[in-house]
Image (cartoon, rainbow, N blue to C red; front, side):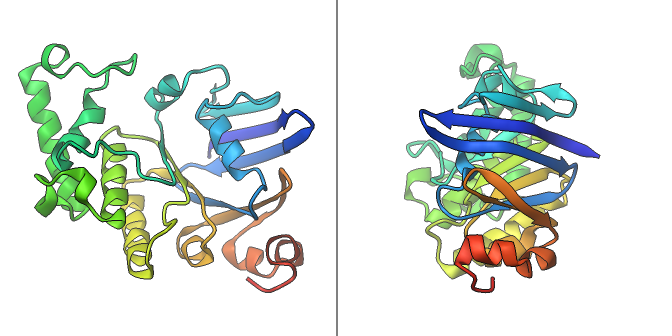
Length: 251
């Protein structure tokens, strides 16, 4: 069953055609990677999915509902969460406070902790935040200032902030960018653990070790177009992918 369906999406910036008739179907519960060289249109596509950019033509349907025309906050409320290349956290707050903040967001995106939430609600949020921090091995840092964490731990924290929102679709934009190999492997293990929650994931990633460790299916973009799609094994051996992505070298 398709959770996210992208039909004939086009986007131009002046004379540049960033997306050219993009069609993708993301199966519910899957891990779907989108790869391609710089300038392939991957981030532009992600921005279309979360409402930061409006396509010139096409449709983006999430669970049968069109996302086009919705504000980013409304898309988030519908069950779509995004993890950015650079972790977006509240550096001056504690780790626990960071995880609790998204749960207190009202429908217009404002935070109303004191008046908007009852005490019972707060206790429920605290209990869930504790559970998530344990699951993501961040409990020992719960009272630390988030800004002092390592890059890998900041990524874990941002994922915790997403999980407390109960997303159905998680979009990850180069989740291991700038990480050491050890942090990258830890992030792979973490994303595998999150998979047990049944959250559908779309990953944009340049590190093929990450892609082939996680993805059920891979789509390859070049010059704004999807040029190939298949299993990781099929993509590894596709000559079109090797030519477009690595100039003919094997992945």
